[in-house]
Structures are given as structure tokens and as C-alpha cells.
Image: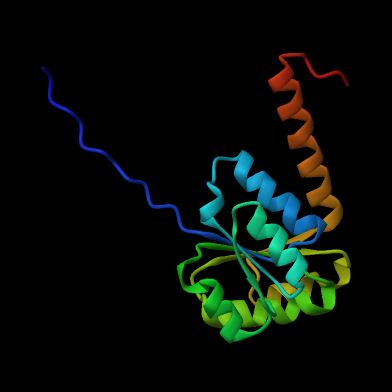
Length: 157
């Protein structure tokens, strides 16, 4: 009988998603498809119904204001390695400020509809500012590639 290799546990820092509308929920699904487990995804949304839907998906969900320091602490921002902000543009920059002050070493990514706010989000501390149009293209391409691989059918152009 051979020696057993010790069981290795890989620590994956949680992903915190601020906002669980169309974009936030799509990003959470993308994270699952990329190998994250639902319990590694934390969602904070001010709308209790959206937070409930996130919880129903198996994510750790908090129904509270994603620009509020106490709410972000309650959501577990201290353990998050990556934070993605998917809020209305006027709230997104405020959320970047709040998140950066509480998680100085985390990677902060923000999705914006209005490209004119990219500078403000970067100045507030976002590491990556992603226009919604670019994110949509990336998610669409990933979905198309996944579905063609799963069906084992070559993608057509």
C-alpha cells in the first residue's frame, strides 16, 4: 500500500459583487462557470428581492446599501480579494470610494454605462473600469464558446 498524498486545501478569497441586477447576476454566473463555488461569492444589494434571489442561487447574500461601510463590513468585505461593483453609475463611484477605504489591497472592478465617469471611478480607486458594452461582449463570447464546446459542435462565424 502506497503513501497517501496529504489533502491540499486551496484558499480562494471570496468574490464580492455589489449589485445583483442583470450585470451582477451574469457576473456571478460567469464566476461559477469559471470554477468558483457559490459560497465563495458574496452579493450585496439594497433590494431585498434581489438579495433573496442571490441567496436562492447559493451565494452569501446581504440585503443592504453597497455604499455603506457597516453594510460592506457585514457582507465580509475584509475577506474579499476581488470586488466587482455593478451599480447605477451615480452609485458606482460612491461605492468605489467606500470599498477602497475598507479594502485597500483588494482588486476593485467597476462596470459603468457612462464612459464619461471612467476617470472618476479610477480616481476613486478602481483598478479596472469596464464599460458595460465591453463586458456584454465578453460575456456573450464566453457563453457562445461554452455552449459550442458543451454541444461539441464547432462554432460558426
